[in-house]
Length: 450
Image 1 (cartoon, rainbow, N blue to C red):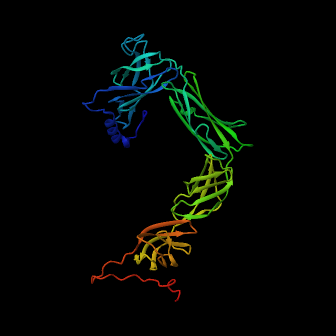
Image 2: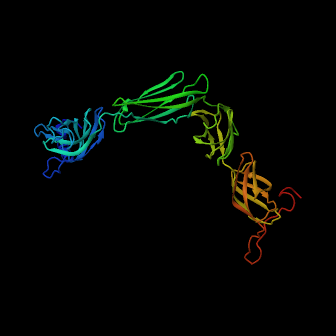
């Protein structure tokens, strides 16, 4: 906030708000208190922004009842540093020659004043004095320590990309750099990206300079005339004392991948289909494959071919991409996900161990390539009636056998929850006798003739 004038129409509401915000106009105002100065310690090479934390700070407020104009003077505070007791040139308070004034002191809120610590404060501890618009003085002992000139260079780190990483030509590379000067101040941070042959990008992070300076940007990795090539990222920070800190990241530059085909072009929506991509410039440890943005597991890789296990996906087409060092290309054509066959019910669900029971299999996604398994044995005389019904005859077996559905073309299978109970008789009937046995095929498949 800064001093402002307000029109007549808003004077009543504004006056009330300012009175409430600043605590003016009442007889029970709380006393002003200084709690802390931040920073509490710093080197003295450059001016530093400072915050005085406290309570009940009230700027000068003026209201003209005739004109209806109101004014808040947020620059009516002043602040000083004086050497603490026992320090060289110790003083009793503001007004002596040894005091150092904070610059640009301004009211920010009832609990905050802002200002600037000047450069060149001699090393030592200092008391803080604040004078309010009414002329009252407040003191906070040993509020600040000047550490004198900064003689330690800033620590510079490049957290992204990782050193000794791989980057593919045309990849977008994110760079994240930090310079940390501790209690000093970074005044310049420059980042240069280059190859052995040419500069790619100079980047100036100085606008964000502070004690801890973070800087992020991105660049496009260039193609090289020959491979392997090298990309260098060099960061240089200079602090207020002229100390220099540096860091460097070195990346291997490789060609972007080429993807020409994939096989098979369809698979189960449950995932797990083994898919092979043909192409060029695949690199072990730096190659990824995504199906609609989901990473697949690479199981085999050579420079011209790779095999992955497709991740799960809803039924439908999925885009497939191959990336090397962050350089991504699309594989021609989509991968079609298909829901696998699922058995929901078998009827009847029991029969003799010799097999021969004519059954109906009810489920979903049945096709002419669907094979029904009773346990691990194929259903005999299987006939696909529609996507939800298959007829057939049970093979010989024993115990409780899970019913499975295998799509040979899709390479996907599911088992359960339906069960066929070999040797069961269907339970007792209402008259205490044995329940009806299921239909038994007595020679060949049903409908095949005598």
